[in-house]
Image (tube, rainbow, N blue to C red; front, top):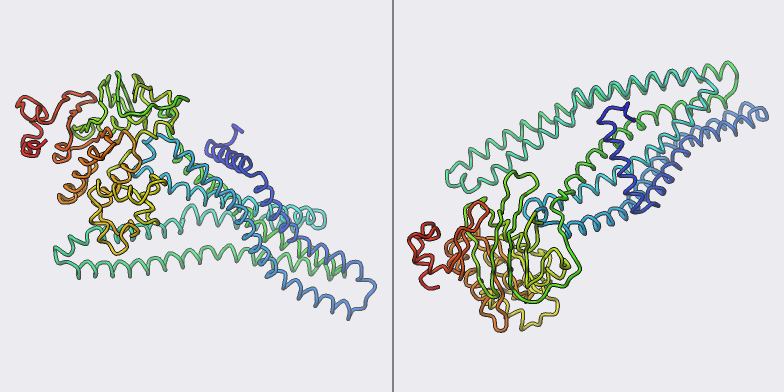
Length: 592
């Protein structure tokens, strides 16, 4: 194995992994795929062999006219065999993909299950989109790999049987066909690796899509500058140029690839002529059928064999790359135990240090703090100071290197994961909803037992009820009909419906306009006013109005808390770092 190049060893290792995982998930899938396609491979060589045997057995007992009639019938059947074989391939394709879908569904469920267990680092924002999209990509690759493995078995069986029979009957055919086949493969490889027309076409399409996207993203600027006609003219010219370049590259590629067909035609003509001369010399029609049938099978299956193997290798590389994306650094694996989390909203961090796997310096350094039940805490600081990291560490979304995170007297590393999540609700700055469900259904996803009254109470507390009731379908309107600010308030309503004692938010009003920010902030203040429910609210923010809604501010610098106190007291102290950061917005803090 070590004699092989490193890249080849990696591909073989990946392929082994793919086959092992597939077999482990559904061992009958791979077996069924291989059997199905192997049957087609046997079918490809069965007709010439059976025909040769039948004609050989009756050739001496029938007259020339009958033999001619048999040959005409054989020719008609042989001509029909191609379309019939194509139908079998289509049928096998459908059956194979139906089988593969079973595996794909199971693989998707397994990957999603792993996603749910992951640290927050790989389960939010762009990384989340990338990982979820990769599941679909991995499914496509595994389907292609399994399908090509089956086809490789089919082509390999046909090729092997035809080669063995020809070696026994007429070795000349094997030498001729292998020579032409190697020449064809060399030409094809040269075209693909030196010229690579498909890659050039892909690059052209990618460039054109990028330019179109760039124009779409700049629609406002284009309108503001009054350059619509100029831009449209430029797009039209580039589209026209792209069409002609695409046609030119495609035609050139087709002409170059036609060399493979020319080689196949030449080899088929030579082997047919040799078979005819052999039949004329011996008077053995059955031998003509056998030799031409086997030679054509060998020629027709040899090229696909190399293609199928090449596809399996390339898809295996792509699949491994996809699976690498689905993996994550196990240094971030979360420690969990079997303890049950106690009720309440008390949070304590003792000497917590946290580093990302690739970072040189810790993001949080020996950090300690206590948060009481019912506090509204704003964590502020410059970008990169660790605000988002701190709130993720609080909810045990990241695993710390040292120290303790304690919630309601329990070390989060020793409690059941679901038990911990039952006391915490997390709101991202980008509210995510089930777009196929309406507003009511989205709310009920957070509390299936909530009554109609509770739903309206939550919407009212989130400062959204009036706007929802004025919609045509009210609470049953599509969630896609809501604005960004309304969606953010709907996420607050969902948080209230969970009735968790702790609510953690990451920049809840980021990217919203002033009016929407005001509405959301009123909703955040109302979180502490709902009768019988006063959760602890912790949020990372740099929005002054948002910070002013808190009753406690933590200033984070270089992974440490450098100031901690009541907003009014901090803003009344000219020496305070918080005051120096927010003195332009002092009026916002007067009412708190």
